[in-house]
View 1 (cartoon, rainbow, N blue to C red):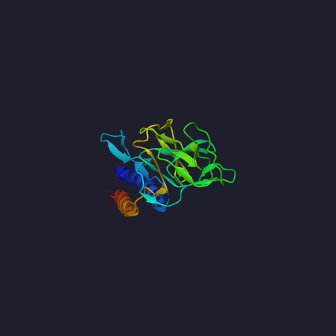
View 2: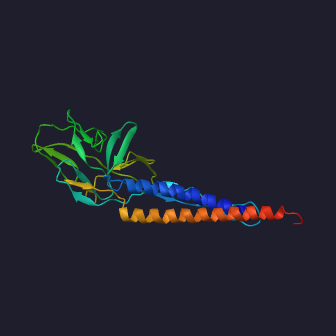
View 3: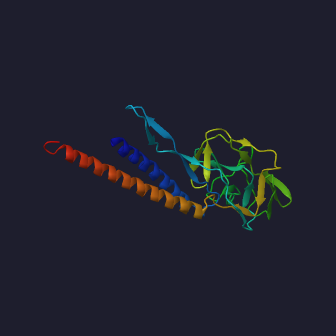
Length: 242
C-alpha cells in the first residue's frame, strides 16, 4: 500500500516537471526560432522487497531540434537558416548558436543579433559592415555584399546530432560537443528576407497541457485514495479485539 503511495508521488513529480516544460513551450509560441523542451522519462526499479516496484524518475529536459516554419519578413537583415545549420554569435561566456536570424547593424558597423551580440563568421571573427554603405545582399552561403563588394560572410555551423544542448536565452543553445563550420551549401544555407518561427505548435502544446493536467489530477485522486485506505486500516487494527 505504501509502495502505491510512493509510486503516485513519483508520478506527480514527473508530471509537474512535464507541466512546467509545456507551459514554457506555450509561452514561446511566438518566439522566433524557439526550440521546444521535451522531457525524457525513465523507470526506476526498487529492489527492496520480494516484488520489484517501478517508480517514475523526474525526467531529463531535452531541447528539441524540430524547426519552425519560415515566413517572409521583407527585411534584408533577416536571414532564415535552410537545413540543419546554426548561426553563431559571441556570447558573454563563449560561442552561442541560434537559428534566430533577425540581425541588425550597430552604430560602429558590427553585425549583431537582435539581442545585441556580435555575429561571427566561419573562423570565429566578428563581421563589420558600413552602416551607410547602401543595400545589403546575403547569399545562400552567407556571403555579404554591400555596394557590389563582398565584405564578410555569416558563419553556418553544424552541431553534432548526439550533442546535448543547453538553452541560452529563448532561442540560443550551447552544445557539449564542438560545432563545425559548414562548407557545402547544397543542402544548408541562408534565405535572405525570411525569419524562422517558433518550433512550438500552440494546438499541440495545449493538447499536451490538458492531458498532463488530467493525469496529474488522476494521480492526486489515487494518492488520496491510498491515504484513506491506509488510515482506515490503521483505525481498524487499532480497535479492541482486532
